Length: 64
Image (cartoon, rainbow, N blue to C red; front, side, top):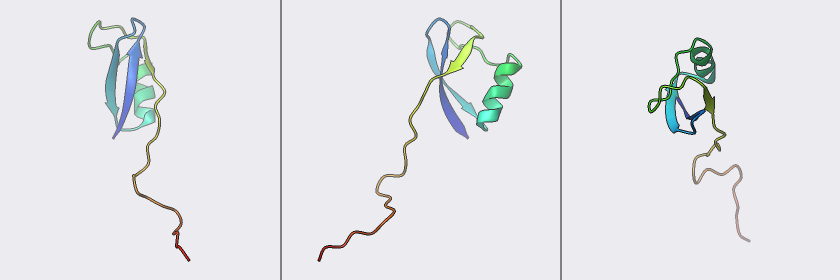
């Protein structure tokens, strides 16, 4: 499951949950997405940052 922050042409922001990025694209192309506030079907994804797991390290540090 993937969550995208979406926006309509009236600047209403909302979340959409999809099985994949391709699922979002497919639903948009078929006209299945609409703003829950105004029913606008002109929906775009907003840019979001990917956040990794906190505390995960790729190398071990030791003090001498």
